[in-house]
Length: 407
Image (cartoon, rainbow, N blue to C red; front, side, top):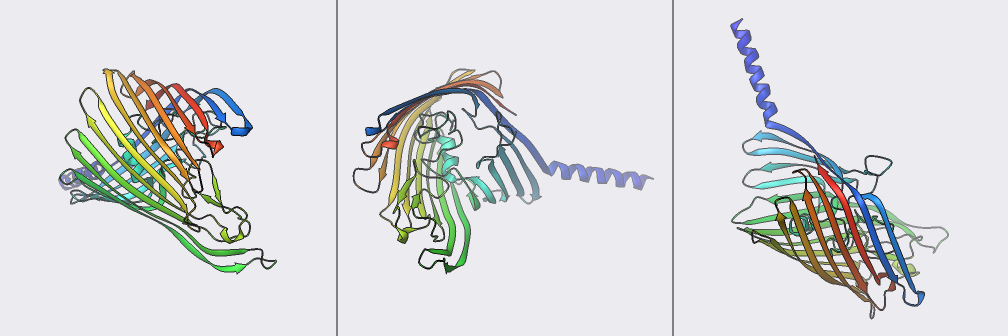
């Protein structure tokens, strides 16, 4: 009897220890409120178009989401971990977003204390992770931020750009191995490699001479980043490059720059109607450098980002965007937090006199009702001017009032 009781006690203790070594956390965020925008489009000879709109929308300060993450202690300083995170649609017909960004993150990996970790799956790029750590607006989805440029093109419905920061850099990517080191003497490094490649036999369409199908399909890329922390100072430098090559096809008579993840600005077509330049082929080089310093009463930010998308078929055909921004963020009272930023940038296109200048600013306030719930007010504006690319000549003011709850 005593042996049986001892055995039961031992098994119970062992099971309790096993459960203590593993943990799963459910977390999420819901953000909804009033979103509005005023846009003015200058179309050159086509005249001027104005648009004003507002709606009870969502995701102005943060994109709503539901996530699950867990860890398991494997012993010897080793652990396994996973994250599954999807976007939520508070105003949609379905709770779970069906947009392309619904899969926010899904990955699994292993960690060794004192060395670092590695993971496979869909994750934020190195650049986006560091933008989130060094952006005075905390990567909110209201216009005016020239680094995290979420609301950029005119003629779209109000609030439609809340998940679409396609101008400055690629936000997340799948088919990728991510590696990150622990911090050594203040330095921490990150590497990633993307692989999604296949090939097919080149065959001629019928009737003869109309084009070709088949050939290589290759989506690859790599990322590298280095971060440094010294007391209240933080600095980061990152570079990432993605390349897409698609099959030659008779139905594709244009080459679109921006085929990796998303287009840069408005679609730019290269070689329209030229049968020798069919397919969608793009190489996107992206860089980000930033620094922050916490003065105690406020935190100061400085950011710089660059992106150049080039046609693989014609290296002279490209779209380039650069932008820089400074800002501050501070608690005005124990429950009121404010921030402000100002920045500018430039688009450069292939060809003569095809460029555009961008200016943006943003200000915002958070009023915390608790650690998990806050009210917010955000206002920002972006102005783009050019003499040659009329679709990017516009001004926009964007505002949002809402409530955000985390759980």
